[in-house]
Length: 107
Image (spheres, one colour):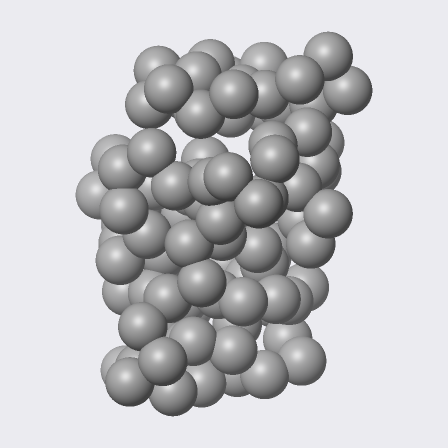
């Protein structure tokens, strides 16, 4: 399985109405310390024949809850809000309320 596929499989586990961070996704995918790779993988969705709709990329925010997607921040915000995830005026999600930390058994 490719590293990107490991990341996509992990992102697919993030439940509806919850978010996770790039670093947490990397950790759960078995790639601790590789948060940037998660960003690269999500940005590459669709370029390798992956079905973008199958991977809920919009549920991944940075470690402080901010939407750091420079390519489609408005779309990410709209998709999060469609799941009743509140995004404030600073493009930030309250991680105390919406963070999914994953299943520790995945580690």
